[in-house]
Length: 161
Image 1 (cartoon, rainbow, N blue to C red):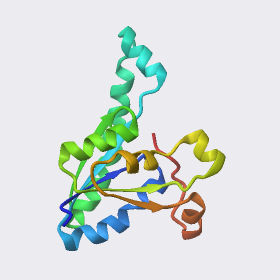
Image 2 (tube, one colour; image 1 turned 90 degrees about the vertical axis):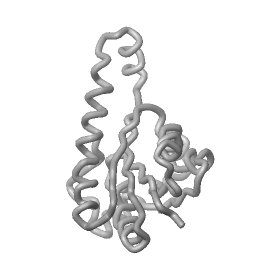
Image 3 (cartoon, rainbow, N blue to C red; image 1 turned 30 degrees about the vertical axis):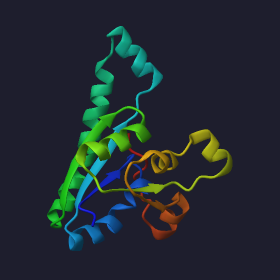
């Protein structure tokens, strides 16, 4: 059975929509939930790090990611769910697979934004890349902004950085 599930979050309400589902199954199954936020490096970050000028920007982004995850972990723990958090820097699909291996996850659970056609071509699909490269099962839940709005879950909070 599944003992540890990795839940990648990008700061958006779409990504967070998986949390209620995972929370419902984690309690009865005594699963540990590990939330993951991957901070992608922009080309400007890479150049700054190479030049040793402004190398603090990725560190600030990492701290922001940790601050984003802390209240989510606290909420899960307050509900009696074993939970933790990790932050990684790099390409999201690569880092998600690496984090799953590092923590000994049995399952990766995440949402997919449900883009198709031109949107998928332009923005890519982290979920699809994880599905193809993950060494463990991946549970994907399709959630769209439209579905969140109709459920009243999209609220005033937009995508976090």
